[in-house]
Image (cartoon, rainbow, N blue to C red):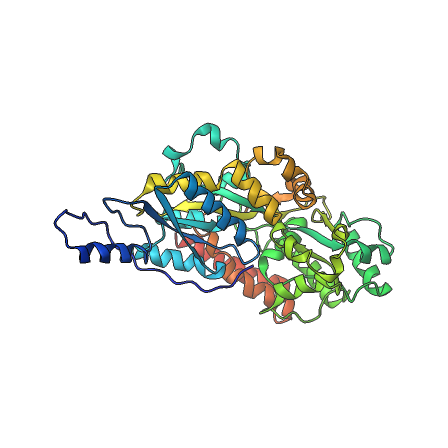
Length: 435
């Protein structure tokens, strides 16, 4: 959920053309020039194949991706990768628009929540013939499940993630707290001690985005949408979870009373980095940045623990991540699949994990010494059972459109938690009915 912002453009797509020997040098030159501009790649009769690849890793995460692309090109001199950065928050709609106009890239790094939507609209190439059953068994089940739709495999997972408590050990110790809270009751008590003791200005911060609110809903027995498409977001457990969060904010006063929703994510991360706040819920993608903060000059000061359990012992953290997909209209499906298999291979996942402190999606990657030696990866892997899959439905990528503003309305005080979640449920029911 891991962190983004350079602007890219969707390049122009051209259809394949056969170049006869009699074509003029000018036309050949024009074809070569156009081939560098494209969406989906264009076939030529000679020279290497060029695949257009959209990636969404931010500035801190991208170097290892560039390195791996170079390694792939060395191993496959007949395939060139035209890698184009796309801002994460624009990529879902950008790819859909490009696919509708037949100008999509050959390969995309997709959020796991978009895959079912793209597959249901036939924007993606089925990968069944390019990935063996044996190879599929090496992937973490939850991560691979997002890549399957209607009996076919459409994606191979690159990284997986989920939220955990990320906390400043020194602040908790200053407040007399010796370990991370294991229950929501402990979480509230610890938060009060931190603020009352003056150990930090805030005990906890959240961004205002619904994704970071989900752990509270799940811990109190709520949810999103179940396997039978029953909406759970406004059940009694979900309402109790959101009421607990607003209680931390307005009654316990252990978090900011007013959240700047436009900058909420950056604010909570920066406040953890400089010691203004003691705890946030966040994923492994942000740890490299967090560790650059003044509060973590000693890297071991960053603690990672599972989301606290609610009153009945239930806990939950949304499973996220990114996967590689190929455009259904690619002119080079075999080459696109070859690139995807390389980027999601064990060796590539190990390189990405150790460079970015992200979580691999292959079981074999967790047996690598470099991965097991990484304290951040090891800490998240140890609490992986707290992760909960989001709904794998075509509408999955659209669920947060109405979720975010209603959570913000509850945190901003313009709606009660019950009213906010009822509004979300009504929109989701309409969305499910529109399939």
